[in-house]
Image 1 (cartoon, rainbow, N blue to C red):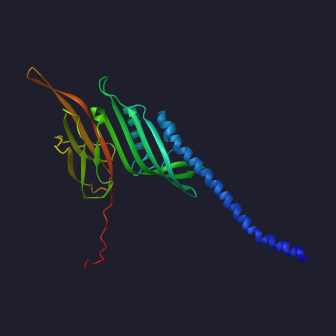
Image 2: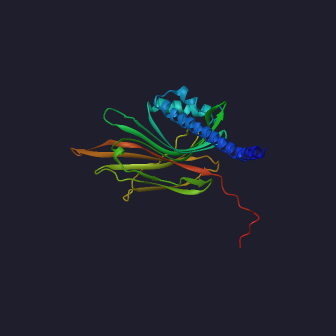
Image 3: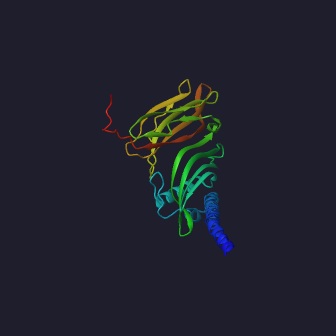
Length: 286
């Protein structure tokens, strides 16, 4: 009897530890399964996008999806369609950096790139390049993971043609700025020899439909740096800084001058606008 009681005591003593290990194992199993499903979902987005399979691509998003820029699924769908119609097949890629899962919610940190050849004519090639760092927010709905929102941390895009594709273009602006705050954007590149370079820097809100930015072209200064001062909008809407570039070459024949376009394009960078910080009235300056 005594031996039985001791055995029973040991059994009850060990059971909680065993149960904890079992629960931990089950939790890790579920976590591993969810991680695989999330990776599969985001990789499938790339697969569908690279094949311009619109319906399958949009099906990876929740019907109540709202982007970090405030676009609902209907508006985002229009943007996807218009982009694919305009540039044709774009080659997308994604690198999943980190996945944080809590119950039926997940936060995924990713790096994304895209590339497309976009010739403007038989004589002038062109290419589209984009790179961004983003955060995806997902929820498990009816047993399936769906993207419910996202937030773009950084984004740089170039659309260049002809000799502009060979330029080392540096477009600099703050990645994040409070609303209604002054900031400077600068453009720097060295034009090809014997070329005349003109450029402009403009600002656009990230909105749909997109409004055409006002461009004021100037000859590139001798130091090859063009700067412009902006004031971030007070609507807490994110912005794009857009640099436009034009390259021409002068051909002189029999005292006549003929200008030929040898390259042009756009360099774009994102500026995320944050709400202005409120002053604490209870804090008195000394």
